Length: 111
Image (cartoon, rainbow, N blue to C red; front, side, top):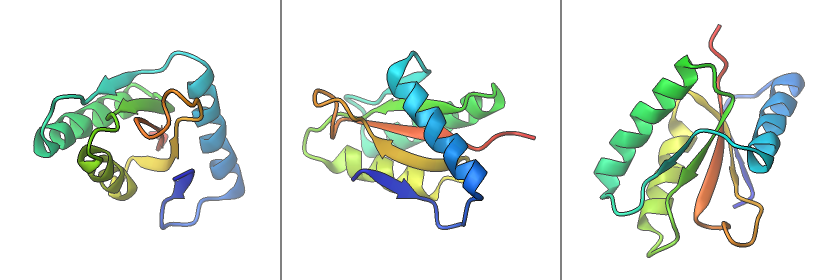
């Protein structure tokens, strides 16, 4: 999975801004949550609170560490993010060491 776009159509500017936020997140330090060792239900509850908090803080992108494992947590997290109203776009980590175990999400800007 390279990029997953939300069902709604983003303006070209919003799409570019979201992609730039994720690119910057991969290069620098951004808020992150590590969901290793959590059940799917625990992880999704923690993730929802994290996304809400970071959006209210004005954070543009976040790093979600779900690990590779069996893939169950990774799949659940990505499905959750695809439907989350605060998430604009998702992207797998680009670095080989993180691929499949880390997802970046650009967040909706609070007006």
